[in-house]
Length: 115
Length: 115
Image (cartoon, rainbow over all chains, first blue to last red; front, side):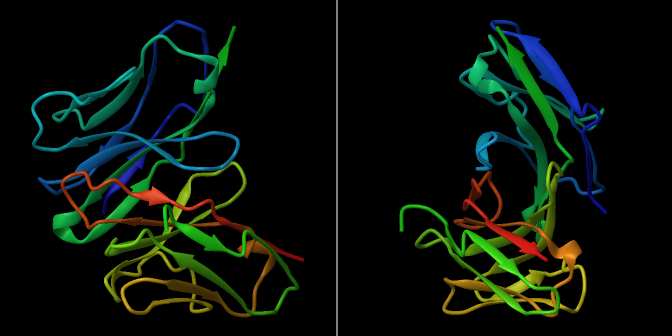
């Protein structure tokens, strides 16, 4: 069975600093997709970044990058130059569309950015 | 519509009553997902549809929960004989399909309170 683990319930960072949110996953499949979503206090789920298991380059989207280490089964999210608006809950997620399994989520990490 | 639409946005019901939650996905999206999120918790996968069929309904917590999708569009999640532990936000999401990083877009959720 697939599983996503986020071990940091809360993280604190100051504005303009970089922060890494940890995510490890467990799957026996060779093909899968990894995602990060942001959920602010308003409750909406905002897609941030995607990494395919066969992608050799780490995904980047603006200030977000995904540090993909396949052998270690980790997919950490790096946010550079944190902003106050980055304060939110962050979820790591994984799917395996080729096996027909839907997106499953970790328990999330709450990020608090202070000035 | 422009985004995933869910109704009702808020529902308070008495224990033992049945409730129906509706999801209208983004036009043209073939994949539709239901998740449940309790306060401050991660997303619990319930069921997903590809077209009108449900390849993965492994997350439905009990036989009181059922879902259907008709015409490859609107989906209804039904909870029979509601219990207090059913209180949560029920999130619906849709995507063009699965795989290759098809971004999954979420609705704003239906907040269910069972009293």
